[in-house]
Image (tube, rainbow, N blue to C red; front, side, top):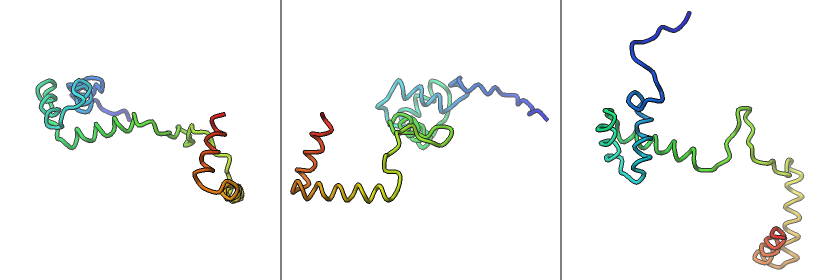
Length: 121
């Protein structure tokens, strides 16, 4: 059975009917504004009464999208390259090699400097 249409328009790209979009538009114009200033601007420009909590939520969601972290794709896998250490045995072997490197170089600072020099070349 198809869903019945309501009397109002559900245009998600219209800031006059979408509070979050109205907040995002105001934040784009006033990126350093306080939440109370943003709420006042949304009220005057778009006619929405929005609370400070909603403004903080939209700001947080916007910052989450722009934080640069690796995000999982639709199939649940990340786009980040996989680590070559895929098993516990490989981790143990890597730890043993790291311990040998520390012993050979004498200190953590020397081992770090050596590894940085190798990674630069």
